[in-house]
Image 1 (cartoon, one colour):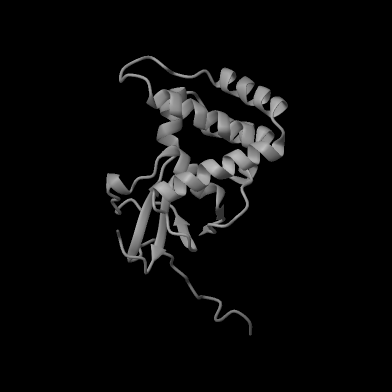
Image 2 (cartoon, one colour):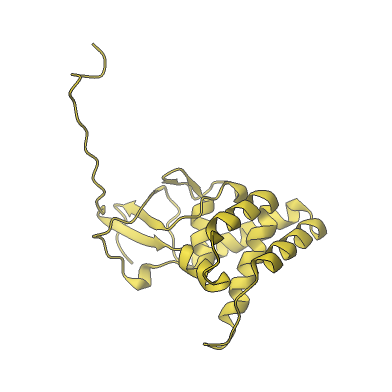
Length: 180
């Protein structure tokens, strides 16, 4: 008989592992940029699938310019303008150069956030787990982490390919790595 008795039940429960845990957030920063646009994450994933590095570089540029604005200053970006800017960037700069630039941006973001250069586990945040705000990654670092994920596994040396990024919030855990 293969696989055990026919009445075997497996229960999976998400738990926080001991070690370093980093919160990956993309939905809040993206909503802050574009407002409560319907289906914004789905639309962003679609544009990233088409324009790849150009879309991510454009998104990061928008996020940087939004940070430099004064609090309360109206700066809600138009999703159509974002898509058009990504299209222009894709036509103007060769893919190899865009990939080089994005790889540099992601490398700097990961280093600045002190994300360990080792395999980690990416998982949804269990509702009963609280992650301190100081362990919450900014948008560039969150996108860099997601670019290095293959399913639930964080592979720090993975080649950057933005069309494969799955936009989701979660917890990146490094079991056995102590908090700094």
